[in-house]
Length: 134
Figure 1 (tube, rainbow, N blue to C red):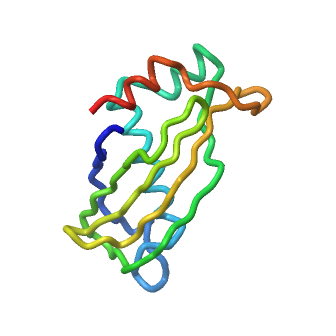
Figure 2 (figure 1 turned 120 degrees about the vertical axis):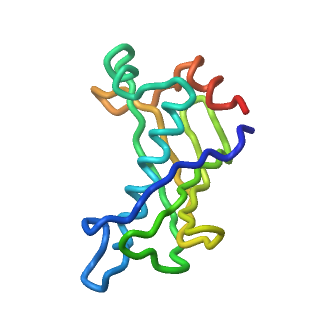
């Protein structure tokens, strides 16, 4: 399995709630951006995949545990660690860290589908192979 991918993020005003901490749903945005950058780092571009093959990725399941709050201006590291890379689905473990402290972690399941009818489709072989490389 491929090693963990990391992506840096900073907490901005727009990420926080009235209590001055990151709004819980925004961790999913951080996770989404890190997944996009993970695919990009492997040589995949989701927009090109959609245009050339009519395929897109959709999130089908998430579970997230919130352990400690992130606050305005915090520098975070968001990780993507593949658990299972199937022919049509990806199961990933993701974490948001401040230094060594885990703030939130979750399992995200992503499926590849046809953009027109949302029927499951195989992930392009070249992308799947690239995602599996160390």
